[in-house]
Length: 139
Image (tube, rainbow, N blue to C red; front, side):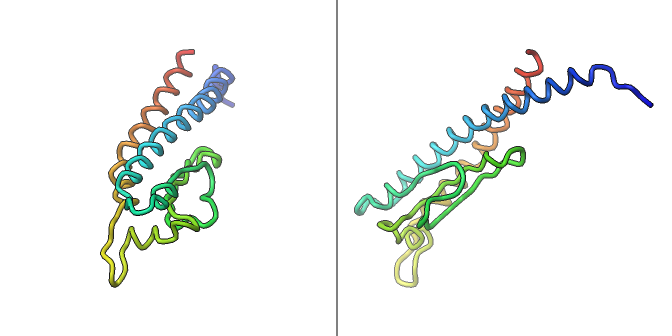
């Protein structure tokens, strides 16, 4: 039987990485979501403000009645699921604005912003993970 030297120390370091990276990843995801939502709100139709006010983000599932949804799920932890949404009872027309209808042209605001910020959000989360891993490895 082979004995691994320092296995207990390695297990402690990996536990610290998981806890530290979770907090770092959570903060990075929040910043990315806030940037996406700000861009979506700036591109949304300015008619009554109901559509602009219905755009937001939350941890977990989207609120009931949200029309358009994009989710970012973590492979590490189930509680790191961030949902960006648009539309509610007042702004039921969010999907029609985004994709258009037979008589109305599309006025995209949601997925355009999502695509524009997706790469930056990935990089931000990746950097936060690396930072947490380095911090846990040195400490």
